[in-house]
Length: 387
Length: 155
Image 1 (cartoon, rainbow over the protein chains, first blue to last red):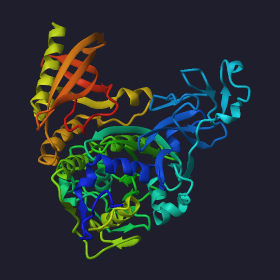
Image 2 (image 1 turned 135 degrees about the horizontal axis):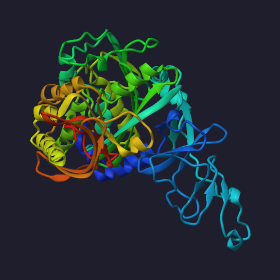
Image 3 (image 1 turned 120 degrees about the horizontal axis):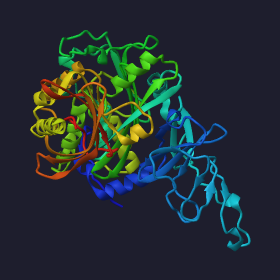
Image 4 (image 1 turned 120 degrees about the vertical axis):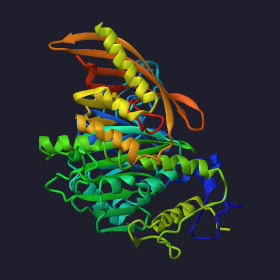
């Protein structure tokens, strides 16, 4: 059978049609989102207490992340096993018992069916233990909970490989975080446009770096075997350029953690960053081939004193979100790339590109070459043949 | 008379935003002032991170600089139309008033499509002195938990 998309022969060219085609998107749902990949859905700090829940989305599937009475965080499909009704509609909440509004079936936070009214009319062999919430395979690193739809996905530690320590570095070294808020936005772009560009910041784009005197420091960029990208830079102390009247908002004040910019960009989708004192995990899911919803979740560390917590809140509200003063320009590029995707032909990757790359490799900071590693993995999973 | 001054300030504010005149936006605030743009979802969950958080007069001035200098020429521009309706007004000790209004903001892209950007309420603290009415604090609380595009301008 011919492949759905003919991939250009040139190793550094990406066919733009994959950024908007509905049939490609449908295949991605099956092969990638519901395939052998791990997807971050919540940090424990988003469901800190037993009975706390959060609604998350992977692909187009609504999920319920629930903190059980036994302390375990489980991931269920957000659907009653009886007739399939969506169980929770609020983004987050607390329920000692999860009840379906349709026929009042009631579940424990561990997913067991506790009560089903009118069961005297059910078939004689009906057993409550046969109707738990559908639980998905999940695992966590540094409190960040991942889910996969496939029993064949390798273990999370092996899947993340060398990027796991950097996930830890972003998540306060030990994952003992406190949720301080969200910023949620929709970008008019394909999920791959989002993920391909969110973790890669073209320095030319960011006037803020120049005006605010945010110099980049010594750093590394590398790709793991599974095409996760790590960017890690030690930031020199920011010197006041005089542009801001209130400079305190961009100071690094965490005495325990050096001022650094660390970004982990996961395959297939998932971004997390620590920039100055902002601790940020970005949960994203496609709404359609041309729209992507992103929830920026922000955290403080449980050991923060009141002053550091307050500093993180104001820095998180200003720095790297959808309206952040060193990140807003990114969103503009996402949307423009999407419009440009309809013009046919290929997108080309050139900066730092010296030859074909695949799997683990180290790159110079700011290189586009790492994105190609991700595209190779994507193409293989999708079974798109080269011309 | 007091209501006239409050309404004049509200009109000045929405006119500044709809004309994308950030200097005029800044002039709506008093000597000591704050501007916060957050969502009802965050407020309900007790989550303090906001979409925009300018907790001092200096930060309000700095926001003008982001829009007019740092971001200039990079973002896809859009026009807004703010529709604001006063819901309540109650006096505080001193020349201060708590005013709550509801808003609906439509936006139009450079490609000419108009859609709803956000709905919500303003919770304002307004100071009236000889120079007129100014915001001592202004908080825009969006019902719109997920905005349909990234916000460049304040709401």
